[in-house]
Amino acid sequence: MRAVWAAVRLAWESGRARLAAYGALTAAGALIPPAVAWLTRAVLDLLTHGAATPAAIAWLGAALTGCGTAAAVLPQVTLYLREEIGRRVGVVAQDRLFRATERFAGLARFEDPAFLDTLRLALQYGGATPGMVVMAAFGVVRSALACAAFLGALALISPWMAALVAITAAPALAAEIWLSRRRAAMLIGIGPNERRELFYQDLLLSVPAAKEIRLFGLAGHLRGLMREQRTTANAERRRADRRELTVQGVMGGASALLAGAGLLWTLVETLGGGRTVGDISLFVAAVAGVQAAITGLVGEIATIHGQTLLFGHYLTVLTAVPDLPVRPDPRPVPALARGIEFRDVWFRYSPEHEWVLRGVSFTVPYGRSVGLVGRNGAGKSTVVKLLCRMYDPDRGSILWDGADLRDLDPAELRRRIGSVFQDYMTYDMSAAENIGLGDLAAMGDRDRIAEAAGRAGAAGFVAALPRGYDTLLSRIFLDGGETGVHLSGGQWQRLALARAYLRGGRDLLILDEPSSGLDAEAEHEIHSGLRRHRAGRTNLLISHRLGSIRESDLIVVLDEGQVAERGSHDELLRLGGLYAGLFAIQAEGYQVG
Image (cartoon, rainbow, N blue to C red; front, side):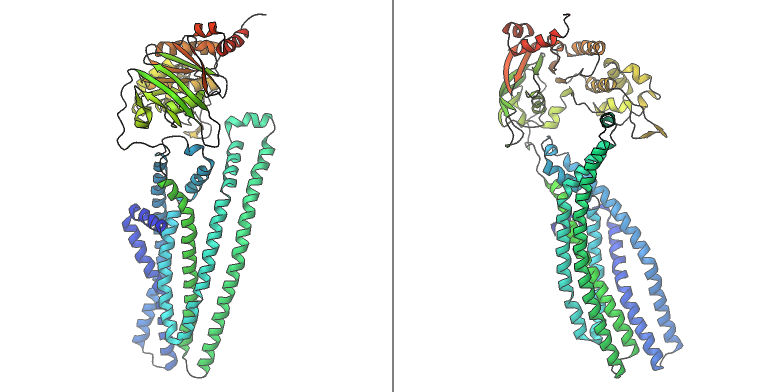
């Protein structure tokens, strides 16, 4: 019932007048068939008893005509209202779902496979299910009204038949609810298969993956894996369909036998003079109407039951607690004046994982540049995630001018950080939008966007695009009927860097492999510009290319989640430890043998 009321509230808030009109038309539509049955009985009895008068026949004929007209028009109007209500509910439901995901300030929810399955079901059924639940609830009302009206008519002819028909609804309802529960469980069970199928679909149609898939001849293999997931899901669906066919076939056969027995009894009664022709007509219509109404009632209740089980995933996402605790009265995030400190930080992604960081302690002084280096898997990316408060440490603390990040509002904290990530995004939007997303306040300021592009070395190739900054950078959408423009990896990286420049003088600048994938000349140009931009700013630079961080004021070397060394470039070389070894290996590649 909690899910039903939630769906009804969504529909009510999406359009009260439409919902009320739909309810009224639903009730009117439910009463038309019983009214036709009564009017038909009256006409037949008047004709067979010879008591018909022109006026009476005219009134009954007009009433039947009115009912027939309403029966023809009402379904079209109710169908339009149903679709419109469904569309409006879908918009509201979708907006609320994505608004709920905005409460997940960190990354933990989006890296949890179980939650991703729940989120996929919420996306799949959250938009349509509320409307279906509401329509099914109105269907219950419609079927209940029709059933009550027909049962009343049937009770006048045969009370015991009315009682017997009504009693048959109980096992039918139990069977349908059992079936709906099994179907919902089946849909939940095949969720991982469907998510994997979508993954293979996206992979086979992905532009970034196309080269490797074709070079390695992977298309057939991936298609087979995709088909395997679909075959597994289809087998479960087929099993559910056969179960429903068996149960519903048995229930339908039993209803038909009951109706036949009742009709035979009525005919025998009529031959004995106990019933009229009108009674037979009313009895046939009433039995058929009651059975149809009970079938509809059971079906709608089963629909509500099954859909609310699926709708539960939508409500789970809506009511999920934030993955990061945010204080109701967070401390203001001050402008950085002293620096950032990692104090004995321990972190792992779940209790089942190994520790990624173990007792990490270092300081990023205000106005200074700190380089972070280490082998792959040393924990560098995790440091960045914690610094941006995508996660909280399991032990220890990270301090922003002495304030624990747990006491700060993550959104306000991130407004003070500029960054270029190694796994930067490529948005299927225009060039201006790709840069403007770095600071939404500057999205419409073409001068600031152009300035950021110039500082990132992107102004030249952007200006040469067919429509300049308004050119669509996509091959999956059309731009004025034409396909968008494809950029190289280096060009995309410069746009990502322009986003960071657009954020201007943020308190902290994080540069995670800002020049990976660039040629030597471009890398030199990028780092020269960054060096000027970083001067006097607090920044954290992460790079495997040790030559690009040698001028950092402090270099922190991570190894297996711990701080192995720290110092300036010269100090670490004199130490002769891990950093010196890594630097020697890279320098050897530039030496002539």
